[in-house]
Picture 1 (tube, one colour):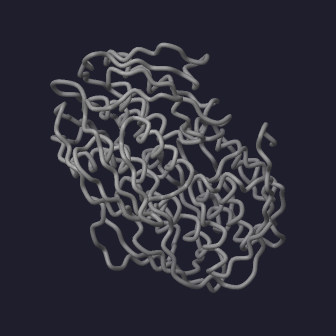
Picture 2: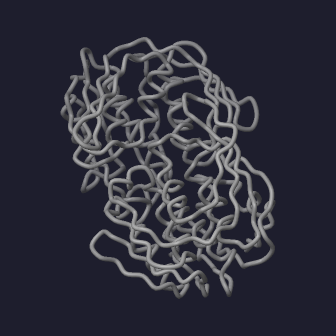
Length: 447
């Protein structure tokens, strides 16, 4: 699918030797975005190690600079951020261009919008097609004025912050860490208490990092699966040191590769084991995966572990809908594991996949069809009938979605014939070292 100004780069993967070795997947994208943002909102210096230097995070870093932060790059993954503190943001002279960064743009709407400045947000063709209205709705309740927007509340859009943001109690309409985080980040510059209620608990990186930087924030159970988060506004945040753990969403690719390629044994270092992010690991263990946690420790306010992964005979399972928030980005690669499992894997409640970089549910289904895998979609459920082996094929349409591209390249490492994807350029947004890292384990991936 060619886009204006975009030169697609097809790639293919084929089966070969077992995968062996150790690697540290890139720093967690969620923590990387937030460490930059909290550096901006803090007084003093924030030192970051292991930052994911993909395009998405660099766009967030540039936006922080436009809003007043001073950034010093000390080497690969090493950054120092001198912040301006809550209330200290300056009006950006130019458009805040987030490229393909959905997380960065949505979080920053809460940050910039809660200050008495005007800022314009834009991005690439993919970001321009993605819904922002569910972020803007609660921000408008907080007094933030959407001056102009593209139809359906999409970027490019311009927001103007009030003299003083209004604290709210807000119940999120869908389980989304991005909605929650945008409201909490706006709440930092509101007097009084901002409360977010979610019916299903979503990833809690924002709350953990707020606490690390000195905010007064509490989170208590609410209902059967939910949380009630209360933030006291207008704290003084202090710069901190953040070691960014390895991203479980990126580690998922070499992890599943080691499970499906016969004879493989791989160690993945310092993977974040936040309980709200390891739904994929929980699911793979239920499927019979040989994954051993070693050297469990704390980094960047999060629990991390080294994972030893060996080739395994997987069995089909049913994945409950309430697990979706803890593995929403991992369903494409789970569909690959399910293709190599024996029996049926049913993934329930995947409606959120329809509003990602593309309609990921349709994109996964089209790729499975191309590879000769039997599946059905029933409503928002994906049902994959695994036979233990995959034919292969392509080219799979990636729709500018990095996770679709990486998932089907991993599929090709054990398929009977190679797998091809129509474009691999966008992999750089989240995992710029994906191809060389996989090759270092012995994977046959190339143009």
